Length: 110
Image (cartoon, rainbow, N blue to C red; front, top):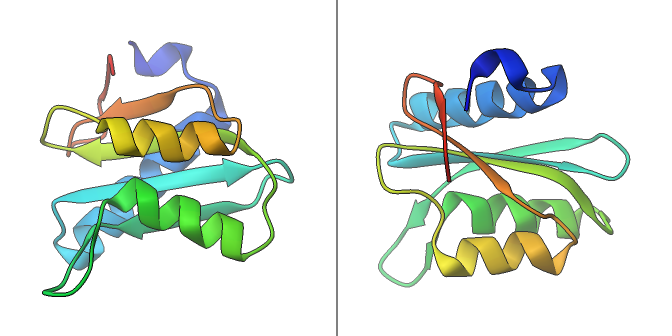
């Protein structure tokens, strides 16, 4: 997937996800955009009593802020991409696909 074919709003959530990941020194960063255009960015949580992926945190933030659906979701990771649980969380709010980018922000196929 070329950066040139991404919608500017999709580029924005990749930048937000990348920034969250870099700011926290986390393994993953994610961002989602809801039906009103609001964005939520997050990183993975790894505590002894709680483990959540970055996408799960971003979706939870959107839901707890009143979002009813998602227009887009992005994940920045050096790993393979979204887990099945991540994809299900995005689809629970009507999201269709997860944009995946490497740590440098370069989009790749998910």
